[in-house]
Amino acid sequence: MSKLTEITTYDDVMRSFSWDSLWALFDGDRDRMNLAHECIDRHRDQDSAISVKFADGHSEHYDYAALADLSGRFANWLTTMGIAKGDRVAIVLDPGKAFYVSLFGTIKRGAIAVPLFTLFGPEGLALRINDCQPRLILTQQRAEALSTQFPGTTVVEVNDAFWVALYAASPAYTPDTRATDLAVFQYTSGTTRELPEAVKHTHRSVVTLMIAALYGVGLRPGDRYFCPSSPAWGHGLWHGTIAPLALGMHIASYAGKFEAGRMFEALAEFQITNMAAAPTVFRLLKNSGLRDRYRISLEKISYTGEPMDPDTFTYIERAFGVTPCSMYGTTEVGVLIVNFPGLQGYTVKPGALGKAAPGWEVAIVDSAGQVLPPYQSGDIAVKRKGQWFYVKDRGYCDEAGYFYHEGRSDDVIISAGWTMSAVEIEQTLLKHPLVVEAAVVGVPDPLRGQIAKAYIVARDPTAQTTAHIQAFMKAQLSQHEYPRQIEFVDALPKTPAGKINRRALREQNPAS
Image (cartoon, rainbow, N blue to C red):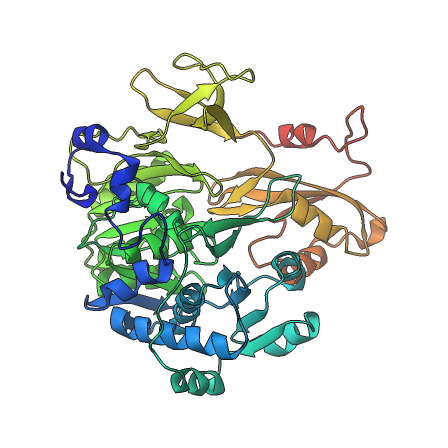
């Protein structure tokens, strides 16, 4: 039987796929496996592993052998720091050598890597660090502030002294982990009524991840792959980093503030053939007008995190000669619906999420769990252990098996590919001295898909300063997670039970 990476047609994929066949892609088995070995060590004889384009224009390149040795040194260094198997290591770093070495070195050690977004403010970090209780925090520029904020946790700054200590450690380290041991805590932004929570991934999570890699992103050995999403979040970590490295590919990432010109430079300089990004990235590339300055040879493009507008879809086809392919799923379950980029015999329908990925039974169901007929709206659900699991989105399915998205079933806000928790934003707003009550909803935006809008009851009507509150929110949470619109109101609408009626607020901002 051909390996899954060698199958090139849609019909053959659907006919030959099995969960067991995924394991043939790895060295580990159902008993013993180490994610760092699968991603780095076993490919040490391959060429360049990672290229990073930085916002200042320079690039860096790391090969598999160097990363294997440095992650081994890091694992040994963690041992000298008293970090044991199962301990959490928080990694507050942008993409770059230190991030990848610490990520895979932590996993190699058998500890649990917890990547955290570098633009989180004190409140955003505290929510996550207080939850996961790391033994060690690694950071580049915030060591003093983090030491003060978390006095019971060891904070290490990535500086010259750090690298001296690392190179003093041995590069030889043999991982010793079970497939079911925890390897990564990946924080989501939470649902509307929940704070951010860690999705706990084991070493064997990489096996299921291959469904998204092969059929959602279309990864195949030989691809040169670029995903500019931050690896502090699910798309950038799992689909942008772990999946392609596990297949021994060359990947590229981006560090720093978004700049369309730098994105085009990366595509040309690294000779990228496969790109995955949020639709907002493609909209910004379109709006820049810079495409014709660069020689680009993309063969596959995928997107996720939000719907893509027709104008951007058409731009991608015209500018790159590639049909963009949607990928849909959840952090908790994985990728469920895909468009099979690169596979022969599959037709992409503009506006559709795609068809069910191999191995999953996906349907549109009603509240009683009954499967609905084509074109009837209901909840998107996946069969797990004989039961329908609702993924909190609504949609419909056509007679050919293509799924269409109709919106969130809850109040999660997806803005420019970022998934934001309304409750997290609300609770932080309430820390501002002027705010008495606050409710946050997602409202339509032509560039970002959605933005967060806050309705605020203020303590002092003469001090209703939008810019002041927005600056406070950027400092407390992160640069993307703040209400871009604020409306001051005398009172918030309430349900008969006394809860804030967010539906009423959303209905004030209908999609155009």
